[in-house]
Image (spheres, rainbow, N blue to C red):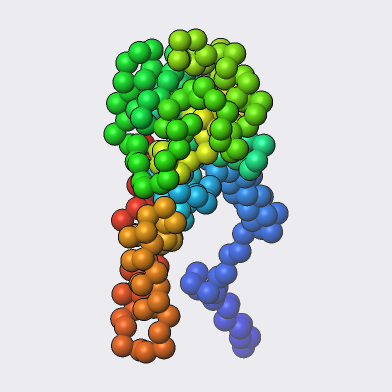
Length: 265
């Protein structure tokens, strides 16, 4: 009598290990990298605020994401996906500048505007400009800064070439902004080196507009003694070797948590 061996049972599905093909995994990784690089290079880009010139709108230690496509040419086929628009008065813009290479300021004067500043108040085409964002922190008096355009070259921080151009474009105490140029200022008016000191920003130099603050480190402001002393005291307390402080207290002093995901206006 012949006997037959039992047929081996198939392995349970739970023990079958299916791994994606290596070329497919690499292709997926490369696609992710390409998309991330495209977004960083052409759509958004991170930016760190290094100075106090835009307080209180933007603080030292704020990390921004800004839109690099909002001011693109409006005749592109992709305008339906990325709506382009013109630079508007009141926009905060990022632009190329010789020293340093990139600056961030607010647009105050548009092409064709007649502009003057008297006692810190900006006038556009003869009318006072409403600027709820402007801050005037204490600073030594400066007639060239607070009254513009200057009639006499007295401030060594004013670019001499700009001062000569300023005289050419000034009529009856008002400066006319040329076509294709923009007059920009920092919101922290007494502590900002801007168009009052070095001139206009060409349209082609404007590259982006801030979108959102994605993180903000707590950093003292040299233009606000009260805030500086408060942050310094907090940092000194955090530096002590005692272990009585809670972790939550240390984390609270590390960053400005309420500013995270704050939309920039």
